[in-house]
Image (cartoon, rainbow, N blue to C red):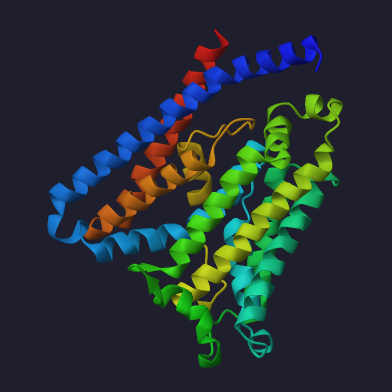
Length: 333
């Protein structure tokens, strides 16, 4: 290996060091926030909060949105945004629970949900990468279309999973070491997402495309194809999330995933991922998700109004974005 190449790599590692330190500090701050929320729960509702059943409830609630959050992290790091994730998940759940699909058994239902989610993501990605549509517009159109198609297919009715397909419901009812299987699926998706983002060429290209698309193109990366694959990955996560929500609710419905896109994007932002792309972590996004999930749990346990919960989440998002801007200004000076 030549000395110039070695020097360039050393310079690249040195340039990444401040960003890594900033990420570690961000994670520490998120852990402190989680600890504070746990203390609040122990003080306000000690008899309900510190129970195994409540912990399982928190993890189960986080699992579905968490899988979507993993896909959203990739898209946002890649410089995009996906507003359609909740609607795509609903469409996948409806398509998988039609009587025609259910007649083939639970495995086909699961595969159908994954294919529908991935297919919707590919369509959005193609419109953005090759159709030159702005991500906000393309995914907003997919949100409306997917939700409408789900309503049309289900005739606005909730579709129950038939007893013959109870194996799908077992993902929620079967427990290993006291934890439902769907939580293990969530953990597996998070682990795979971390490996892909941090240990593969695909992950490195995602950071490159989000940080500077033109430089990535000049470096030989097919930016358009990679962008399309990012949205396909987001759709894949929506398909997996559809399986989890079908298992939890035993239904497929056009109302599934309402506002999930906002929760997922908010969790990613809270976790430190830049909305402009090029920086972010899976761990940060999951910590952000857990913060939101704990807030929801605390509001429910304390009998507080849902509107107050939304106000609190909105304030947290504003503070997170302001902190991002402040950190960027400090780094640029």
